Length: 77
Image (cartoon, rainbow, N blue to C red; front, side, top):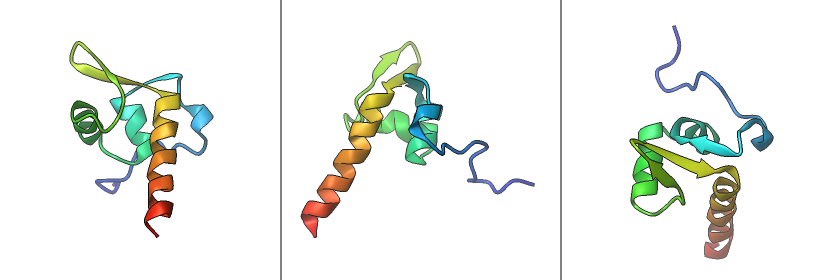
């Protein structure tokens, strides 16, 4: 039996993601549930676009988000 919060797939390198990611793929990279990713996008934390019921994100925007998090963490120390 799988652990409840263990992802079925793990991203080892960002190049494994498609250029345009859905919430599930973005969640793999950011280690968040797709529902959390959608909320982050709706709240303006993540840059994405909503098409119908789903959110979509550019891989480069996800990378910039990660870089921004780490830069802010370094500045706070």
